[in-house]
Image 1 (cartoon, one colour):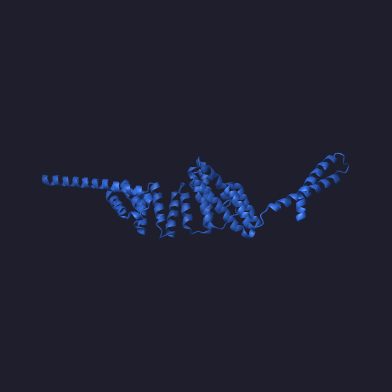
Image 2 (spheres, rainbow, N blue to C red; image 1 turned 90 degrees about the horizontal axis):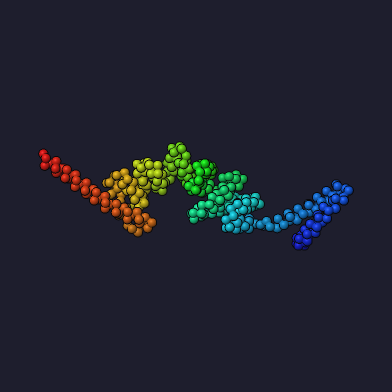
Length: 332
């Protein structure tokens, strides 16, 4: 076999010359049928040589195939990497699911990485191969619901990149398809239902989105994270008093959550509820500094300044009320 392989280049060169001679001789050939048979034979041999070369380039193991695909992914050649993962899954069916998960994970991570670096044009290019490796290619789809939720999340994050309403609608339709495929595999996944709620909140029927958010809270009763997210959504929809309720629910789970105390105090301040604002800010400022994320330091300083102003305002109002009371008493 080794000898045959070493002879392949010489044979290929010889056959090319013989093809040219065959074509030239064809003008003078009387037996057309013999010519066709001869020419077909040459083509068959050439095809065999090409097939042999292709087989030599094919990775011998699934691990080598995955390495080859990763190299393409490292070059940001998403289309080629996607094709590589698909071909590898077909070539090594006993490891097809592993290859599917590895490919989906790799491409999705690239999408998030590019998005976080604000390279939106490249991250948009990345989306379609990621979708091919997940929701839009049933023959290759991995059995990991997490990957579908990640794909849906990638779609949702790109909503502001889309320049037209029609493009955004298509984006959210694809996101909804992906998250529903994930929920078919894990129908009680809180993260999946939350993403579905975010998708539905972009559509006219906001009640369906609210129902999904409530479902998430039922699925994760001990978590305050989703109460905080729900409050944020409610404020975005001008449901301020609903947001107050959600923030207070979050504080039941974590009474010294600095972020929630600040947000709740700010919300009360906008609603002109001075006493509640002061109470929230006072609780915030009683938390030991080492227990507060340094990223919230600006908010803490702002709360401290607001508290001073509010106490002065309360003092002025108290003095004003006392003055009115005294004047009333003197008039009697």
